[in-house]
Amino acid sequence: MRVVLGTQGHGYYANAASGYAGNFVELQENGTTVFAISGSGGGTANTVSTSLNIAQSGSTTFSTGTGQVSLNGNTVLADAKTLTAGGTTSTFNFSASTAQFDTSSGQVNLNGNTVLAQNKSLSVAAGSTGNIDFSNSSGTFSTSSGTNTLNGNVSITANKTFAQNGTGTFSTGSGANSLNGDVTVASGKTITAAQNVTTGTAVNLTNAGTQTTGKVLNIDTGAGAFSTNGGGVSVTSTGAFTGTLARLTANSTTSGTVLGIQATALATGKAIDVDLGTGVYTGTGAINVTANSASSGTLVNISGTSLGGNNGTGVKIATGTPTGTDPTITKALALALGNTSTAGTGLYINAGSSYQGNLIDARVNAVSVFTVAQGASAAAVTVGGSATFSTGTGAVTLNGNTSTASGVTITAGSGITTTTAVTIATGSLSTGTALSVTTGNGAFSTAGAVKIDGGTGVFTGTLTQITGNSSTAGTLVGISGTGLT
Image 1 (cartoon, rainbow, N blue to C red):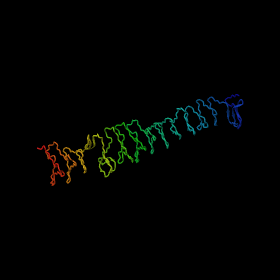
Image 2 (cartoon, rainbow, N blue to C red):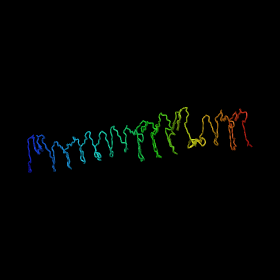
Image 3 (cartoon, one colour):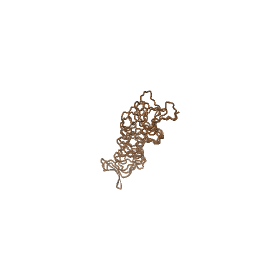
Image 4 (tube, rainbow, N blue to C red):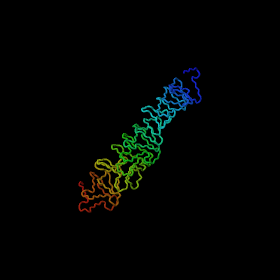
């Protein structure tokens, strides 16, 4: 059938009553319907059904009704064509499908909120070099509450922060971790380093040797008036170690200060406090200074120039608790030896057998006033200058030869009234001389080598008395003058 029409009219017109159950059009091939348009009362009402292909060409449009449109076969969108929603409430729903959904290889825009269904994943294909880039967004990025793994390098852009809230932990890898900015530990929190280190260094602060000013480590307790031990820095060990608990090493410096302690307002506290507790110390030095290669300089220098006018003490060493009350005077070195019957030595000095020099040298205005010197053959005690030498009231024993300097006299017993001023007791002397006065080659013209002067006193006793009542032989007084003429 061929229908040719003009500019108006219907090529085919069919009008049926309401509820028409037949087909307005039905085309069959070999007894099989291939195209049909049914009425509203048919088995499949108001339906255009066909088993043929539908091919539309040209630039005309294709529009469906507002009911459901089912695409039951594969659907291909032609090249350079788009699939666009016609309204603001349109949806695109593949939720009933379990098959794969592939987008194009071009840019995919998700213009609305995107929700990943429960128990579903968002993955990147293996070997991909693509990016997930949120850099253009000013919104927030929140991960799940499960484990989040960042398998590559992580970088935070300039002037941005990394903040962690709550009670969760933060753990880094075993590689080097650089903290390039200021690090603040919150109030009441601690930093614990390397609890299980057995070798190596638990905490290492290194500035690569470029520092000229500033500090590698600065600990500032502020205005806190703490009363605990180690409130600023505490190093504690409960192990019986044999090494060194804290050590400062500066083997390349020649003029700096390795450890400096400054406490300009300290009045009654301690700048250094060494407490060995109740342990019975048997070592060779609780404080040990070793510089066996030093050839000059001062190993220990203690300066307190204002102590001299304020009755202070420079160094006090106590090996016990003495009795009595110490005088209120300045003491550069004070020794407290206790109050026990056990013998001890307040000041002990020991030198080798070949030592030659002063064991003790006391000076006033840089001039020696008292020295104990070890010479090549024997030790000597010297009281120098114009100082006097006075002994106690006990016996004084001179075990060696005793001499006086030229022009110096010995005055004995100027205040004695009843006892003996000078006594020479020889005990078992048999061949020697109890008293010998030798003038040498001196041609004196004065009173004589020996002078006994009774002074101006009117005495009634004997000025000179020689007693030998036990002798039965010998000579009491022998005078020899073989050269006398």
